[in-house]
Length: 320
Image (tube, rainbow, N blue to C red; front, side, top):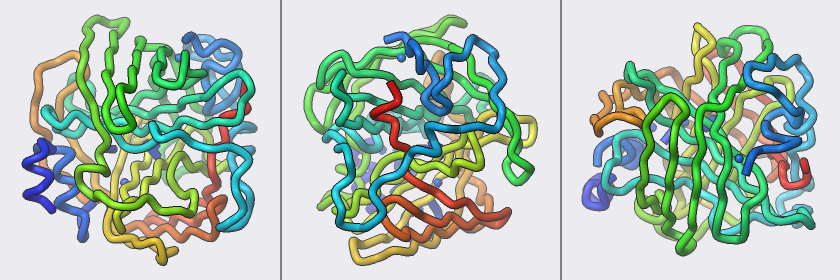
């Protein structure tokens, strides 16, 4: 698999916004090879924040984020074929996008995206954006950066503030054009494509596992999951000891008959930022073990060396 991904040019959130084990080569390939958000410019909370707003412990929208509670009951909304992990197959140094587009709102489809990357010092960072799509193949919105509470400590407040703007034009279910500009200066454009189609081609898991997950007791943090071709890849978007945004990733074998995944959490550093020249990141450092048990397509238990999260699906399609 490693050679296949290197040839393809082969994040992070959350995640999530999570690979050593059997998916080590697939994960290395990532590194080798909102419309203004309006009344919900921050769908991680569902309030109307101004830049630098501090949030309390309520997390109503994440708390609503669940599907119907069986494997086979259809959820009250659908996701489009644009949902999944996306990456640049040319500049593959640890930048990736976790996109989910949910149907079900009479006003239109809604997109929520986590983009993991690096800051100017090479440290891991992530951004989010989300709102209604302009039409079924176009999205534009404000990008937000986050600060929060260190993982492993008691959940505290989180802050978000706008840092730029991005546009996505989907030319097919597997390819899109991404354009962005940052308020601090710098802009870019790249062609992106579906990551899992390249590294794990095959059938998507039919159990509605793919997309954003959250624990309503830990606000401002998310996990993105995609399972395809008997493989799972996950990104976990959270915060470091200084409250800065941080992401880990993991992945490996996971068939449609499996309900439990065991893996190793990887952290990547010293990659390229959104406004700098391309730089290959360092090899990942392991951050401990992780397991995730999917109880249903609405509930999962994530266990890591520092504790445990009770996850449920993030249902954002009806937040506006």
